[in-house]
Figure 1 (spheres, one colour):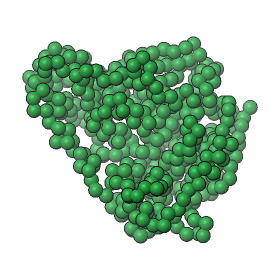
Figure 2: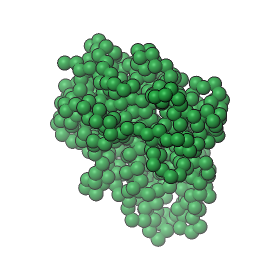
Figure 3: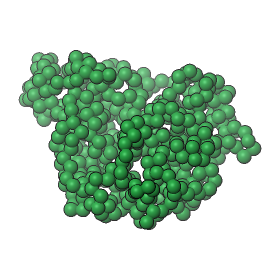
Figure 4: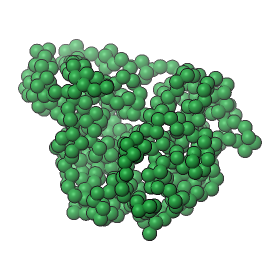
Length: 495
């Protein structure tokens, strides 16, 4: 039986029962509610013109995150709150401090992107409530990483981020919103049907297993950061949809058999934060910050990323070299594989009927292990990799053991480099060994040329990334990361 979609917007609970399950929030706002402050630019989660803030309950606590409304399907909003630029208008008709700061700092010219910037800055404004210092430049850059501006330039917008906290404060009633959302929560699976297409949002792992078994060909939806584009760009009919983000057990982060287990519904931001607590690593931290944008990382999931299995995905290479496992689940039970064995060929994975990703498991660091991961792309923020590399070796007395090397962007899947590994294993970690490993990479991969990079560029840079790893980890004269990191300045840049 179909249930209406319920979400809180503009001071009241909205109910929707006549929209397609794949109708986006942006379409609903502009075309159905005629709230046109939120703009459509790219319709793929890249430009940020459509940015809104979503309020949801996570383990009973209110969480507010800026997201791209152009790729969020309406049924995913059930039980949540939506805030758009229209909500920034003050009761007396005046501007919110975020808007006032943008005006004072001349942060808008053509104005098309401005509502999205305002909403990203508002999400930061809420995080800064009670703070005695303005946000640092790094925090501002991360907040705005999903917003593109073609005419104003970022300097006045960055100035506005500091200025907004200096203006008379405007509060936000979190308690009232939390009470409203508590009344909207469902105890059992939410199902919404329109025109023969059904959207299922199970609440428990048992419900997830049951609906997956009943509909093994249904589309699995997590953060919609990839599946959303199947609709907005490829115009695909998804058929029935099973949504994972409401399954309680899939939000778990725990230690299982000495490994960090991250549920398939955990956001990319929360997943990377947990992994970095286990593997403190500058290069992994940089990869986290360069993975798409903050709105994408807040909605996308690590489980969805590995399930998608893109050959240019940024997470798979470092997970493979660390020996990560993927936990698959069906109504028949669990199946655990090494992640490297899950990928069979281009967009082909080792699925069995009725399976879905339950979790991924990340091993703890090993004694003497040196681990790095690197991303090459044309932009620092929000860009797809041309090459993504990961390396893990153990050094004993200057000799390499258990070398794991993996690349994305070099083959039909993210995969290891067995000949390069063999060339350096058991050898002293010196330049002779390095050169042997670099030469072996040419036998491990035959990269393609495309719009992001030529085959020659990919091979040369893949080899040079192995050299960079050696420079940073060689037993004598190791080079500090800051000396070879072209983006190191971002860490200490002043606002």
